Length: 149
Image 1 (cartoon, rainbow, N blue to C red):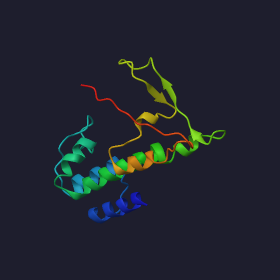
Image 2: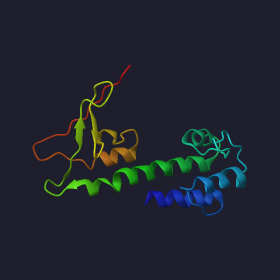
Image 3: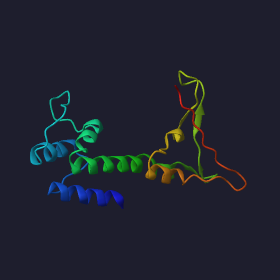
């Protein structure tokens, strides 16, 4: 599994095991043990490990890059891979969403339970999740998007 590989790689880079999902442990590894200078502080005064900070640190250090990849995959797993199978309708064998027209300020449709409009498309793993959705025989699935100016 890719998450386990990334976790192992992070531990190798850090020189020790730690919980990649623990902000406190990550702060200790990055800023105390690896001696990386914090770029920002949290409102509580601790060094930030936000996505924005890690992206900037990833330009110069390998561990933040691995952490970002791990976080991205973990989010896909927890949001889609783990949850979507539980949302399959036993009568149809399919996942069904609910569309809402009058909810957004722009009048665009939104969807919930699950929000199938948010399935990622910008990375390979997100595209693989989309491949799990297949049309019934003699039907096709159409994907469209409009860019707002």
